[in-house]
Amino acid sequence: SSGIAAIIISTIPLAVTIANFFYLKEKITYLNLVGIFISFAGITMIIIDKSFTVYASYLGVLFLTGAVVSATISGFILKKLTNYYSIPTIISYQNIFSSFLFVPFFIYYYPQIININFSFSYLFPLLSLAILASIVAFTFYTYGITKIGLTKTMVFTNLIPIFTTIIAYFYFKEIITIQKIFGIFIVITGLFLSQQKKSEFFLSKKS
Image (tube, rainbow, N blue to C red):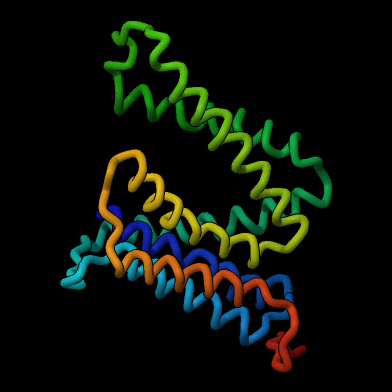
């Protein structure tokens, strides 16, 4: 389900933090870790219903785990690339290569796309995805990595369910429950803690 997917995807910041600790030997404060776990708890409150019922297939969980691992690896690759290439260059090549990779699968699974008549009404959603999601969002994401690091940037992905909930309230007239409001507050609190630099306790990899 989309709820389970959101919960598993929200573990990406934690996976990146652990990998960052061992691979890049970056210092991590206890406060940062607490913030990440609190943020994850908030995501769970936003997604899961009052009965706390969770259903998921093992295959689906396996694929989502692969997505978490892939996101972690791609984050490290992106961080390395920012040392050698400009952000516009990285985004441009990323979109070009992604197009070649996705088009064959798109045509295979949606062959009916060839028979669809063109309409200008399709332009707005397509341009929105192309400009906002594929260019603007990834540009800010990459720029954030260069300024505050990979771990702290990844935590901001936990804001996605919050914006989804708020937009759904205004656009689709969905109801925001007290549980969701409390979950949003917890996510923001965790996000704030995860961005703190000062702490008396540091975790650093021992040589």
